[in-house]
Image 1 (cartoon, rainbow over the protein chains, first blue to last red):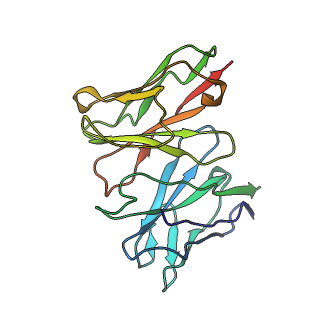
Image 2: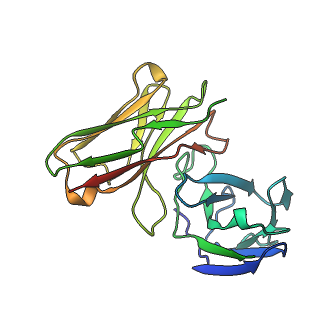
Length: 114
Length: 113
């Protein structure tokens, strides 16, 4: 499986934007970039995913580099409820070797200060 | 929509005992996944089902582990002859198809003493 690299931890203040980086230099052309987060004592939660173009949803935005070797998850206004571990995951397309399952790394622990 | 549910939420057992966990996926989700998570690590894939068929098993799933999904609805994960190294959070997830995001349950925390 293609690997992702994320900082171990990041800190933010409440109501400020947060940019969570992810490097995936070995990404293949059919790999989707997925982000999940895990709040304390809960199962992971889907945040957003994309292939080539930037994506927005109600939770966050995903900015994907033109060469697709890196991406950034953007939380526009962090709240205390956004404190979690954020995982950047590459997920293959149907028929690929990483089809179906999610391969989690250690993720980035986001701390949000009031 | 009640989400993915798992039972029990916590299980304490003595080494050598057998344990069984249950996962109820979101209704009509044909894919069901099991993951294991130890403290400070991300979840690790164990196995997944499409309907009642078990399509992939991780090398982590030793002979002491078995998973079933009869009739393509709920799933059970059984661990025989538990060892202290089996202590972890066991997470279940479901999805309507491989192209969709996975929805995770709250997990079952297993402690082997």
